[in-house]
Image 1 (tube, rainbow, N blue to C red):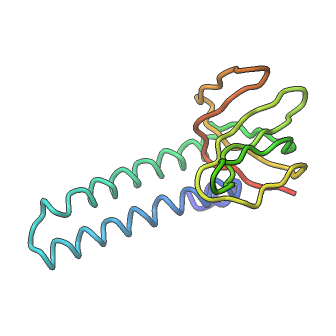
Image 2 (image 1 turned 60 degrees about the vertical axis):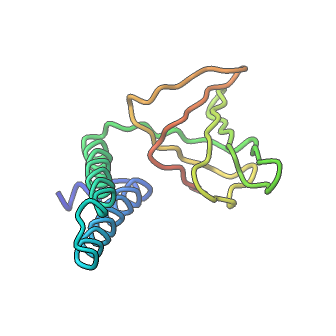
Length: 146
């Protein structure tokens, strides 16, 4: 299993480790809440979050090991920003003759027009067509490759 994990792309390995470590952290918070308050009901959201993160991380790991993911590589052609704080809202990736719009999760401001991007998504991810481009709403990872 270690060999297959090391063979995964760096972005997918990062997502799997984040999900597992945050699952461990949520389990530790559950234990702290139970120890200090002696109330299991108060810690139930933490244990539910922990189980969800372990299952989700396991799903991403399974899809990575069995190669059930798709990599979309291309150049960033446009960046859509929010009005008020100018954070990156979405990135447009030119791949071949198609354009893919990808909403950016989290606070990432390192994207620039013209940089090379790699988008990792499940082979079952739905891709929608809107206004002469495709839209993807869920993905495993988005990374700058060059």
